[in-house]
Amino acid sequence: MKASVIVFPGTNREHDVADVLYAVTGSAARLVWHAESDVPPSDLIVLPGGFSYGDYLRTGAMAAHSPIMRDVVAKAKAGVPVLGICNGFQILCEAGLLPGVLQRNASLKFICKDVWLKVESTATLYTSKYQRGEVAQMICAHGDGNYFADDATLDRLDGEGRVVFRYCDTGGRVTAEANANGAQRSIAGIADASGRILGMMPHPENACEAALGSTDGRRMFESVAEALVS
Image 1 (cartoon, rainbow, N blue to C red):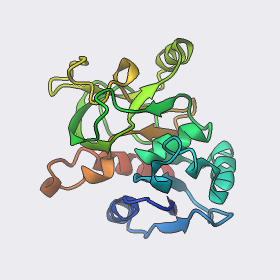
Image 2 (cartoon, rainbow, N blue to C red):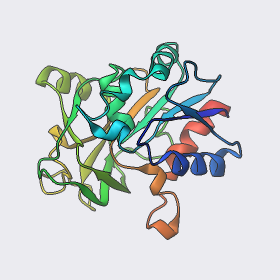
Image 3 (cartoon, rainbow, N blue to C red):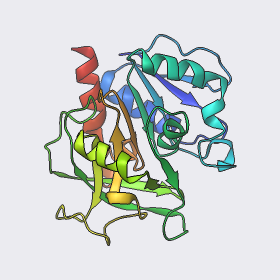
Image 4 (cartoon, rainbow, N blue to C red):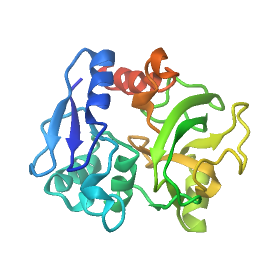
């Protein structure tokens, strides 16, 4: 499987993602600098986490206008799967590939902690190895993860089954207390209508080894690898 990981000034999770992709697929991912104009032929494009351009203006807003993003958007619209994690989710929204925006956390504080996610959809390239309704343990590290969209958009996402993950407690209950950042309807991750574009705030790449406290994120990468190789 050929994967490309896009790197912006301030990106800091590119090697974490590349390491997991290599562990799962046996193929080295290519790191692509944001100033390039073309993404190499890829089965998967990943926009990893970090603080692109220092999070100036709105998070992800400047990165969404980097030269490489024109080709990322074009390839996404042509059907190439794109995974956006944390800052990558913010960039996907700013680039118009996913609806909504990511605002400041309700606490107005940076959050770095374990979170539990209820798997709401297995109908994406990234979630086939999960069971709908199961709880996955991952980690979040962000200051602007509060997902916001208008009611019509939220209703559409719910109605079309495009909410992929919600923040929950360890028992799978979606509560205000378990909502890590105040996101509307406890949304932690959403997909496009095809299930090929996924954006999420928590970091699955940092939940792939027992030494890190959880391996629940590894199945995301195994799901997409199986889907694209088969």
